[in-house]
Image (cartoon, rainbow, N blue to C red; front, side):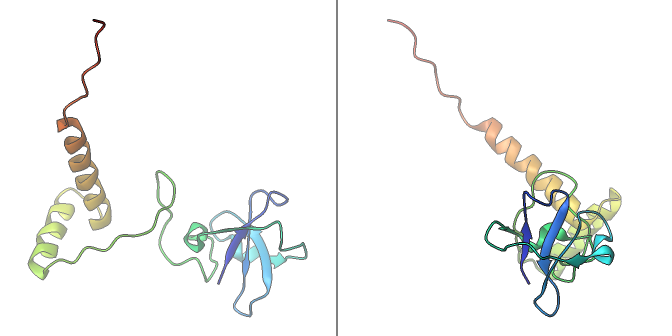
Length: 127
């Protein structure tokens, strides 16, 4: 199922329903319940990632809540042993965080520390 947006319909998603017909609905939680047929042209539509409509009820948008910060990105997958996952889950639970949020926090902190440890380029002085 494909998802689109249009400058002619700000604040609304345009996407395919289960039968392949184009419909549009409000960009808000549960907006899919107020969908209506899309009768405009398809040429001016911009295709976007289906996950952006997550939370609106659109069947092509996946499940779960939308990210709280930043733009939507592609998910990453990390292979882990059961023991590793259990220890990560324990650490997340201890801080009252979801495992996903805990991982994101730890990875962002590690990336910031790595960036801070890089030597800064020296400025060229006048000779």
